[in-house]
Length: 280
Image 1 (cartoon, rainbow, N blue to C red):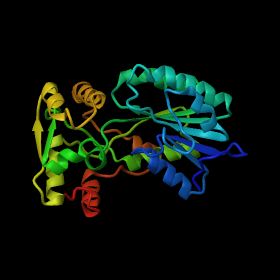
Image 2: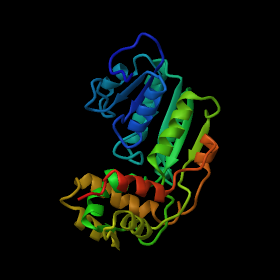
Image 3: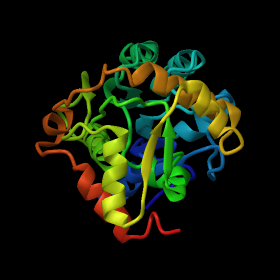
Image 4: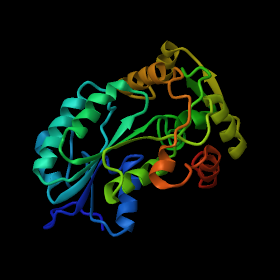
């Protein structure tokens, strides 16, 4: 049962960003396995806000393990001080395990990773880059529905990762031995350009979805009015910094953590199309 109130035993799993793309899968899996879960966000019954430290202690009551996701992006300079202060509070409250979602190929995230590693808790860092689910439930959904992915991604390939694989690795790190002190870099099994990803979506939906490469400045102009300004800047920056080829290779993180291969983009696209994710 998902819990939003207090507990009397130190056995609750705290999921920060519990309604997010990875957090909700983590919470659902833990709950299905019989673990006590407190999934929090700014609007949850027990509210949590990275920018309001008064919300931290109530969220940590009775917590033994926590999954940390930082919004809007862990590369934000404000992230590391907040992560460090929170992990110190968490350990004092009795938290024994911390799992951090980090960015693959983003050295700007390393100070936050260091804060978790130096917390005194058993830690695991999970580094990921572009989610498959960005295409069907996040900022790329509307462009897919419109038939045009207008992005400053050039033709750089990316091994898109399924958020369910991320969640499975996080659950393993929260509940099993053998993952502490480990940094997992996760990727999908294949490299695809955004043009190839659009072609796969077209094939599965029977609709024309095409990729239109643009400059970062053109992307900002096209996204203005559709996304908040700060979100536009975050993604323009990510496309510029991360899609430069640094992540254009596969990793074995999912196999190492779970003993199985990661989900393929084709399977994700087929499942999303079957449930009507891209129906206009």
